[in-house]
Image (cartoon, rainbow, N blue to C red; front, side, top):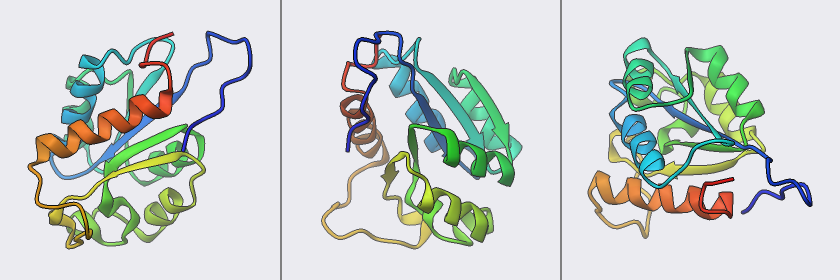
Length: 155
């Protein structure tokens, strides 16, 4: 899945929304890896935590903007071009109950390209993913973001 850019526009920017809960470690790792891969202006990284600790961790990892709670998850799911986060974002009551039914529905219905990281903490196992360490899963997710951006993440 790729996003079609307007023809002739080099300044086209995309919003990459990184959504995480609990301590925000996964989201912070994703944001750090995106920055290391060169994602910057004109693209934006929005960090949305299901709690303040998760948002703070992702902001510390250099997200461009951040917000916390159920409504921000719904808003970024509606407005973002790319969503990145744990697979539990699609399941009500995942992340120790931090994902509400309306959050899961908003992410599931989003027209954004969804890049979901299959963590076992959500009580969900995905066939064919193997038992990769979290760092490798994040690398794969960042590679998928870069492919979706289609331009190496730069203007």
